[in-house]
Length: 200
Image 1 (cartoon, rainbow, N blue to C red):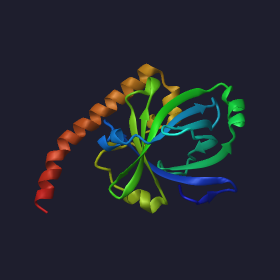
Image 2 (image 1 turned 60 degrees about the vertical axis):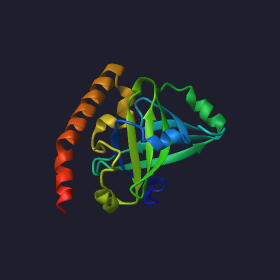
Image 3 (image 1 turned 135 degrees about the horizontal axis):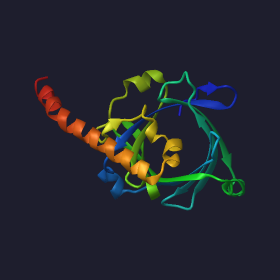
């Protein structure tokens, strides 16, 4: 995450998000990562998070405020993290919330490190890759990774707050339509790209 401050405590987060249709094989061979459970508190910009290591007993607890202002670009958000003890987390966990659960894995490709999120529960079937960047210039230059279907950074459908607010039917219909659209787009453009590459 960039260290650029916004105000006294908040930071600027710059990241791009990509839709995938399958998990990279190397992640299945070495499944180290985190089981993440997010509690989105209604009518707020707050998210309570528990991160449980899938290979050890390590746990991390955070209370996060995350939002995008009207003047920020789709890949920019303002984020403030407060790290909690287990007792503090348990006190807040009883509050009304909508829950989102996923497994996060680190994946190295194209000389960059991505976070691969494999969603569970009623969001099963969704796989997203995210990459944190230092600044706007880097965000503008990063290209679509080879394992991804499409850059969906600007699509609000894939934000955590929107995912938890949808019904299971709304989610499945929205995801299925996007997967079809992007897979069809890849099938249409791939021969052209291969032909262009052969002539360079």
